[in-house]
Image 1 (cartoon, one colour):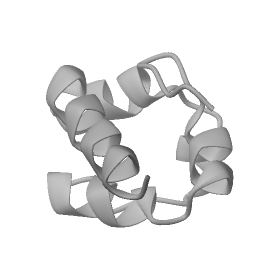
Image 2 (cartoon, one colour):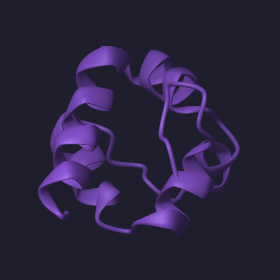
Image 3 (cartoon, helix red, strand yellow):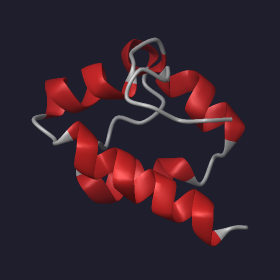
Image 4 (cartoon, rainbow, N blue to C red):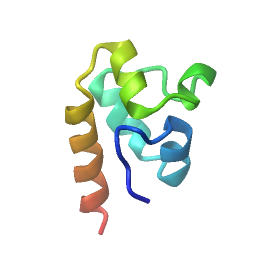
Length: 67
């Protein structure tokens, strides 16, 4: 799965639950809340005042480290 800023949070977390840790470390503590599951990564970052590019970079580094 290629994860982008448009990837839906629920899809991303279903793909790899370890992403939740990355999101929480970034300051997104409501991972799994019903509202966030249907949002894109970009939308969720905007709500939390986070830089979507930085969070996406961390997620991609995490996934690359698993290969």
